[in-house]
Length: 196
Image 1 (cartoon, rainbow, N blue to C red):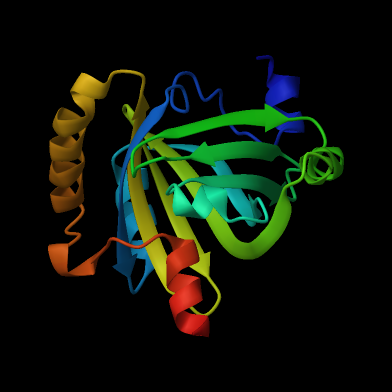
Image 2 (cartoon, helix red, strand yellow):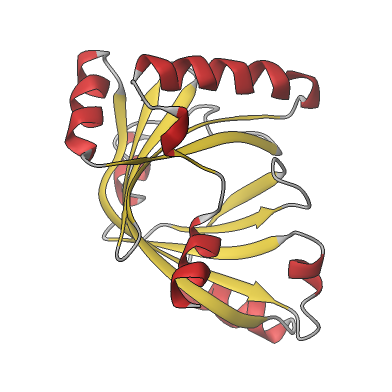
């Protein structure tokens, strides 16, 4: 990608292989202050990928809730002000994740609805993404839910999932993220629990 292409998509650097793979190993931690983590990232030479974006995730399912019943999610992610749009398919299971860039979020939404999917929920978050070696670290703030740090890596190799889980645990320890702060629910599940 050229510098102009990156800037057009709101990226500060080329993502390389950071988002390549069909599996994602991820851990999410609740934190009181994102700036503490941001300072640690900067001190370690982490590379900012996107900063200052608000992401709106639009979740879809079929009328019979087939995706939810199969532990799957289809999500259209719209990022502002960058204007990027992603189509994300998660599941079945916790580690399966495939995504792709889309040129036009409105057109993508119309296409998804024309295929018989229904919008079932929306979730909004402020998100900054950094690259730290082979890992990507997101700093998230969600209205009503709080502030979170996600540590993640993607891969095509299912045999590396256990190794990457261990490495992410070690990375979390290096940021002093405690197991008490580990969140096992998705943001969507957290929001649904809050609204119940």
